[in-house]
Amino acid sequence: MIIYYDSYCKLCTTSSTVWKKLDWGNHLTFKTFRDLEDYPVEMEHSLHVYHHDTWYKGFNAIIQIAKTLPLLWSFLPFLYLFKIIGLGDVIYKHIAKNRKLVPVAQCKAGEACKNPSNHSR
Image: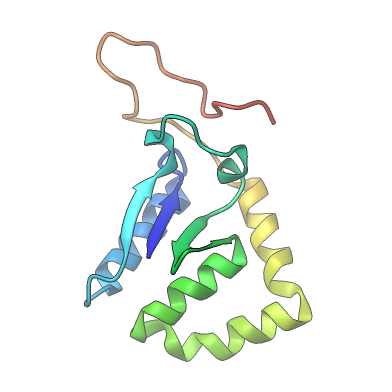
C-alpha cells in the first residue's frame, strides 16, 4: 500500500509518522506527492492511497489504512458506521479544507520557496 501525503501539512506528516510506528509488518510505503513531477491537483485536497491496483482518497483512504494496521482494527466498526451515515466524509472534508499548509524546510538551497500549491485551485 502506498500512501501519498502532503509534506506541507503538519497534520498529514504527523499522521504519517504515527502510521509508520503502527506498521509493524512494513505493509505501508509513504510518499509525499510534492516530490512527484506532475501530480493530480486532487492530491492537494485529500489523502490518496494506492492499494491492489485501486486508488482510495479521503475518508476511504483512512479506512484502507486502518484495515492494514492491526492496532487500528478496533476502530473499523466506527469508521464504517461513519461512512454509511455520511459523517466520515463530512468530517474528513472539513478537516482537509481547514488544514494549514506551510512549506517549512521544503526549500532547496539557492532556490526560492514554492507556493504551497503547484496547481491553481
